[in-house]
Image 1 (cartoon, rainbow, N blue to C red):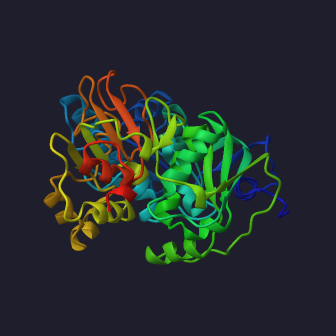
Image 2 (tube, helix red, strand yellow; image 1 turned 90 degrees about the vertical axis):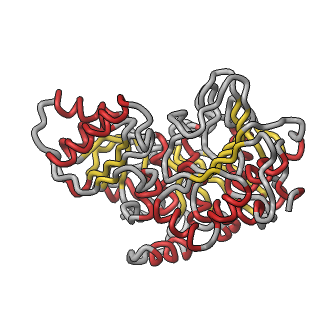
Length: 418
């Protein structure tokens, strides 16, 4: 196969069995498809309306109850029942019920995501799996029903924006800050239908946990997916979950756009309401008092995030009149956090800790904002009304910045709290 291709072109060429480049249309077999309780019920209805009798391959379908989980209302419970019944009828054994974890974390930690796989999901943040070099992208529920029935889908090969991460990452600056800087530079539509490729010397400093954040948020600037090349860190992670290593690949091909970020000059950043590209340094926002702080979600609810937050919260207390909510992204992470003593740190500081769910991030439960309330969150979106009242405000930041803000009661630079 011709190697003068971007990573997106290489993966889709391999999956389609032909040489393809940006702008080409291809139909390719799907390795895995995931859906959750926010999207699977509609896909089930479409699947039934299509007249399909059985899914194409039950071993390649993953269903997760994670959004309104545990169920906060009778209507949600009925949707959960529909999913359980559909999984049983179609012998879908990769079914993850309440508390197992957020779908994107499950897909990565259980090894469904793997280099050069083609994965789709009925959720926009499916692009997270590019952290381990899968071409992964979100689709709609109707498309999900089609994939369940046929095992394939068509794609337009995306153009690529190659993001060069230069320099060394300073203390208390994290991948969330890198992405918020990128969003400020290019805007929320700056990478529309493009694959973001993260390359450069600073990539070596990014753990898989950190890379997931950068891949996860590719959609927030319009991206089709966010990709890292397989390297030593990829192998380390694959080994940690019992998977075989994958050959290392160097960047090649000609991207449509390039962007260089000197990470050594970055500071802790915060996205202001109501757009991800409305970004300012945390140190300039100390006049903004908060009512709630949230550490969790598919973006920053991983073990590394919990360790970072605990390092700031240890020996300190959450400010009076501030609610700190901590939700590990999966049961495995929760158990590791317990064994490492992180959960004790959170509880001692005055936080509320819950089993894995998307709840607060999508305004489902466990942290709905009231009129005029302000929340600083590690999640990926700060759209108006996303976490509750349309007159509330959401600020996005790293787990370090969120933890520091919870201690002070106002948005804070974590370097000033340690």
